[in-house]
Amino acid sequence: MSVRDVTRTLLGEEIEVTLVKNASLDIETEHFTAITGPSGSGKSSLLYLLGLLDRPTSGTINMLGTETTQLSENDLAQFRLEKLGFIFQFHFLLPEFTAMENVRLPMQKLGKLSVKEQTEKAVALLESVGLHDQIKKLPKQMSGGQCQRVAIARALANDPALVLADEPTGNLDTHSAATVQQILRDIAHTEGRAVVAVTHDEHFAAVADKRIHIVDGRIQGN
Image 1 (cartoon, rainbow, N blue to C red):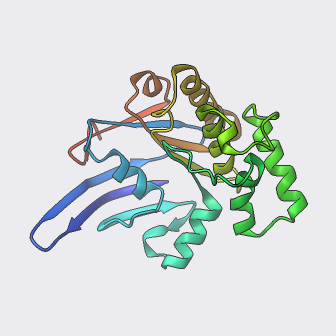
Image 2 (cartoon, rainbow, N blue to C red):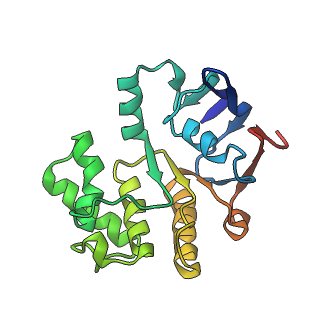
């Protein structure tokens, strides 16, 4: 992904707030990138731009040969579904669905696999994050760390090129946080994906291949 001169500004009736200012950066395949900075610095705003959840006010975001700022809303939604995976601080699993059913949801929405194929893939993904014994469990029957690993498996459901995580360990105990951190590193290093994570955790950021530090909406050192 190539980001050039991206700015994100919110306009109110009497106020203008710039969340990200003239950001330029490259997100590389097989790299685990951490975005750090003080509270309110624009970390999540930058992540949402990289995840194509927000549109920049100006600048370009090119991914896999596609200039995403030129896509229609429908095409942008389809691009996100096919190419991007998302993990948030809170897992946002559907409480009435099992772990396997939650992981199947993005595949169902994409509609490229049969139900049997979706189920087999969901089971394999859950096994890959160490949850072979939790496949039929509901979220309320699992720990917070286990639920977050289900959320990681769900983010991988459609084989995304880029996985984005917003404070993925912020709600976890030390052991669970370390497990999630290692899984995200492995996704980048062994599965050939790009992984970008916003974090306040210095230990988490220290193991990243690349660190992007942002202050007052501006990337430092670029």
